[in-house]
Length: 190
Image 1 (cartoon, rainbow, N blue to C red):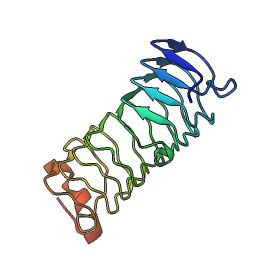
Image 2: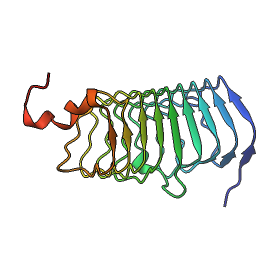
Image 3: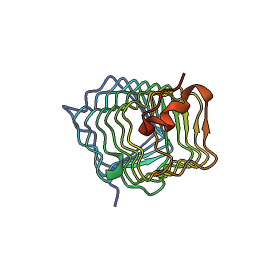
């Protein structure tokens, strides 16, 4: 039973690393310039919320529910999204640094990533059907047994994806970045 509920409230310039965000449900709320670095927001429900210019690095998100949540200009290093409650999981990312975060085994179909740094992100066994990586850095991102069917990687760069161990049926790639599909063959492309 949820004891705490907030709707359409804006939280600005708050350090939740020192003062924990109260457990409960937050609907259509905005978190602006807040720090959640190394905080514990486990089992909190966020519906239709916006996180703008926030630091969520190493935040504990066990059983956290993110439904239709938008992250913009956020630092989100080392987050384990696979620990979230996957019921209704719906995320959007713009201008975010998600370095060394993990989406292991998650179904995040149609998720848009725009202008994001996804260095070392684990997408193993993830369903990325129709995901858009718009101008995203994917250096060292892990794609193993990943469903990339109909994904759009035309403007993504620095990725390595093995077509033999990933589903890339009808995925979109640009001619300039095709080398990311051929890295394992140790060939020179000019």
